[in-house]
Image (cartoon, rainbow, N blue to C red; front, side):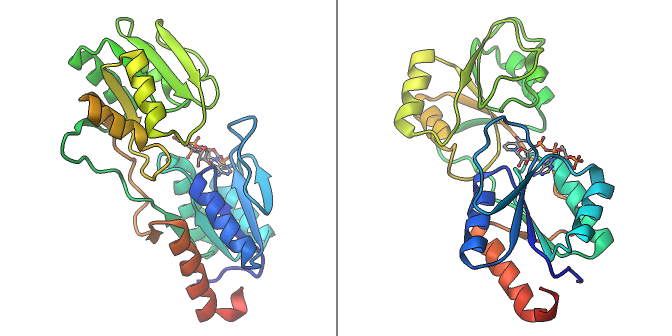
Length: 257
Ligand code: NAP
């Protein structure tokens, strides 16, 4: 592995990415966090931040070389597959070490009524097949158009910011940012009287309360599986392990960092 003498690049837009940045800043490690710029008022990590796409693999590779990036920690959301593929390709090309923070998926437990699907379009088909009438969409702003053709169920779509059209004809927005409490989720499911929730299998603790509340009420959850990671990329399960990975690498290659 090569890696420059400059900062660590943290690909972010998530809670774990902010945690990684916090650890590195506290440890005196130069870091640049990168956000896509999707939301108008993002939660910012500590330390230096850049916002906006790099311009594909070529742009990211040029950024890595131009800034002498010493390592990349990809702590993006598990469903942000394109930037993760780009990071793998750009790091492979430039020799900059890469690790992906791959938080464990949620697994169904006793009492859960999950319906696994592979994509948002499959989730839309499953909503129809299940004959759901009142559906809480928690899959976020992106990809909401996958449900636009469903005109029978009533939808509530929860997201940080309003999605671009098209949306289902009977759809109300709940503009909120997690984390969500169990009491809050219980109240929401009770008040809306939903009979189905749609969720990405994001993993992590910030949005699990809806799954507990759904189990308590016996509500089905359509659970969208994650896209696969690029082959051969090393992974760690959490922010602390990402920092350990970096420290271990620096101890082994002190002159390159
Ligand atoms: P994506 O589909 O994998 O990426 C699309 C393009 O957005 C990438 O090719 C890249 O543009 C740019 N991009 C994405 N993440 C970036 C980052 N951290 N820094 C700079 N550029 C980035 O990503 P996405 O699903 O749209 O997600 C965008 C961001 O939102 C990510 O940072 C992710 O962590 C966060 N997020 C996503 C979800 C989700 O469900 N997808 C949920 C929560 C948070 P260029 O090719 O021009 O470099």
